[in-house]
Image 1: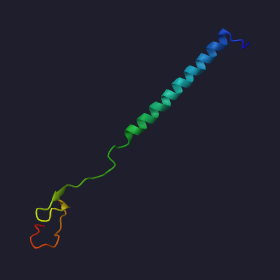
Image 2 (image 1 turned 90 degrees about the horizontal axis):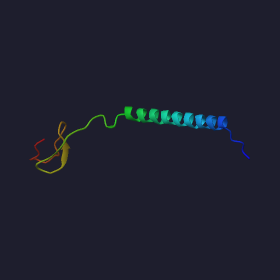
Image 3 (image 1 turned 180 degrees about the vertical axis):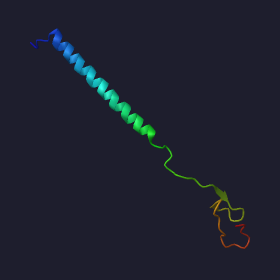
Image 4 (image 1 turned 45 degrees about the vertical axis):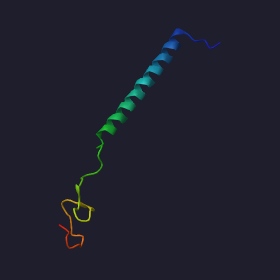
Amino acid sequence: MLGLSLPKILILAAIVIAIWYWSKGLRQDAKSSREEEPRNHNPGTETLTACPVCKAYVVEDSAKSCGRPDCPY
């Protein structure tokens, strides 16, 4: 038959355990490299405010007049 003896079974078990630990280390490395990446890729955000006259949303810090005579910006 196959002739599986105790030394062959032990060597096979050692190979399987070594492969399992090796793959576990690879998964841990991949996980740690994903955690190092920033979650928010947007470097900055801007606050929008609704214009009280025309109800259009404008950037709060750099709002410009829309051309209407009653525009507050």
